[in-house]
Length: 129
Image 1: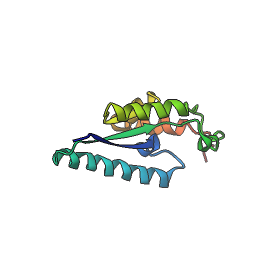
Image 2 (image 1 turned 120 degrees about the vertical axis):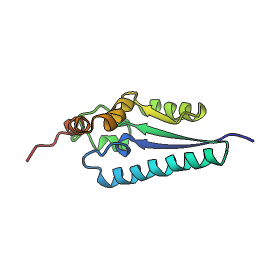
Image 3 (image 1 turned 30 degrees about the vertical axis):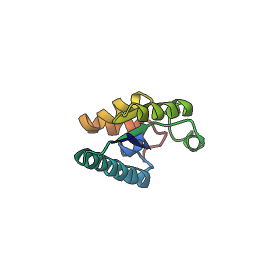
Image 4 (image 1 turned 45 degrees about the vertical axis):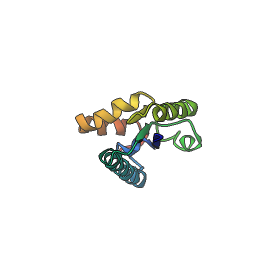
C-alpha cells in the first residue's frame, strides 16, 4: 500500500492564544484537535497515512505586513517555511515548527502558562489602559 501523508499548516497562534486573534486562535485549536484525533484513529485502524501538524510563527508574507505596527516579532522567511513543511511531510514528522523557536514557545505554553502569557503580551506594541 502506498503511504499517504496529510499536512496541515498553522500559525503558532493556533497553539498559543495570542492577543487580537480570538477567532483565528479558536479555529486553529479546533484544527489541532481534529487532526490529532484523526492521526490516532488512522493509527488504530492500521492505515498507512501520516498526519504532520505544522506550527508556524510569523511568516514574511502579505498578511505579516499588516502586523508591522502591532507585533515586534520579526517575520521568518516564507521559502524557509515552505521547505520546512515539505521536509516534515516527506519525513513523516508528527510536528513541524518553523522557525525553530516556535517549538520552545509551544512547550512554554504547557510548562509555564503565566510566563507564556507574559511573553506573548510583550510581543505587541499595545499601550496599557
